[in-house]
Image (tube, rainbow, N blue to C red):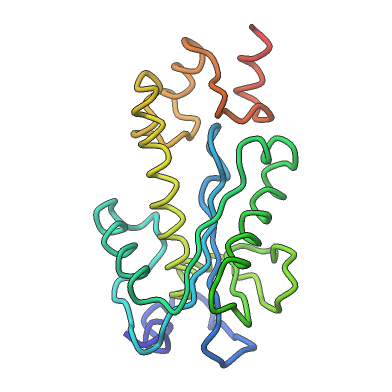
Length: 210
């Protein structure tokens, strides 16, 4: 599916006016702002108009199996892609807002070939030197941002599955680090891990009890 056709079919939002007409437009998105543990992960993707990918949309609207299949196609067909992160320690040092933008800048800088223009999910650009625009609900409004959301989601979920193998009592494979009842109960029972974000209130409360 061509990018133009994708935009036509995803017309539930206002028309997205993009001040760039070349082929090195990078969609940028992140996953992991809300969890209590682990890195915030960002991805940047420059799609290849000659190799369209069907089914791209907001990663949260897809099943895990579909996300993983699309992740493979994006990696095979994109002109360029990169996945980067900011660690839990960087989240604590910088705050989640600035750490998210750091992860985005790292992903953008890792693209080869480099991007010329950015479309970033959200309402703020990440402070990169490249021109671009922030797009609210961007992962549902442009296929390159949707592709980035898929890469970031698959990468971060894989990190949580790996952490679950080390600490099965916390249930990370199920809740992916978000502050669910299961996670908060495990946190109270077993205490914070080194990978937990110490600046987040539920973790701070448990640390204060130690």
